[in-house]
Image (cartoon, rainbow, N blue to C red; front, side, top):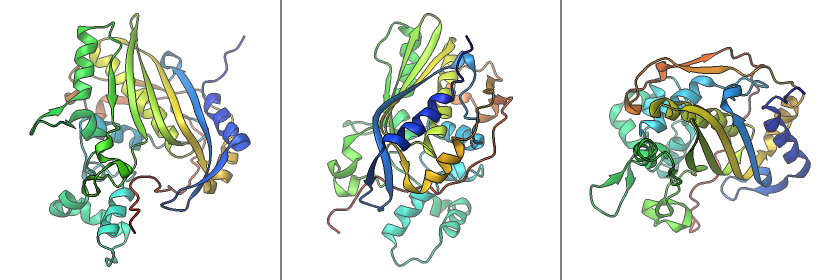
Length: 317
């Protein structure tokens, strides 16, 4: 019996939300979405790399964003220097909130971050973003941080039977109304925790994503964490196993409904593959150029507007 193409899991999730989604409205932006709760996708990485084919996914963005996280960066200048603009909106949102009289457009803001190091240091920074928390989790001891990712790699090598290989990005000290006003992050942490596990010679990763924009964000998230699984398997000397994607609130924004219906008309193409083109085993010495995507034949892209929803809401205003 012919095995069903893995991408149908994603397409069926889109249809599930169209059929059963409950309408919600973001209190910060007013953007409406349709949600279901508690879903899961599973990709066997030996059967192909799950970069979706029913629309073209921005691979360069996936690749450089992951290295931005993985190497502990928290300033968008790293991405802008590589002509990747997927994180422009949140720093600009923060800048506008703190400079309400400024007439600087987003395009002007991005150009200034890219060109002016001092401006970038002040306004391009996204404190407590994924990379910082993966690699420099703050502690109560002054000057001490925890490198969760390096710890997980070391534990995996020292104790292949470990059940505790979790990397967390959800720190209540900086999130929502749990945070003191001056400490609160102005953007949401969506893919908030992942865990590695070794079965035989295969390394698997499970992501828990508490909130998921299934049309725009999830294709990136699938590819990013599948690639992270490949990279961690490479640096620890194992084979990649499964990427398991577990969702909390998974939703389609109301202004993406037409795009979703267009995507559902398309049949998946064969999945591509990835190759790590180096023998280097130190995660900090790997570079995006070491990753080679092969045989990616997608349908054309389907464009949609990003909703800059979630994050800190100033309830006193």
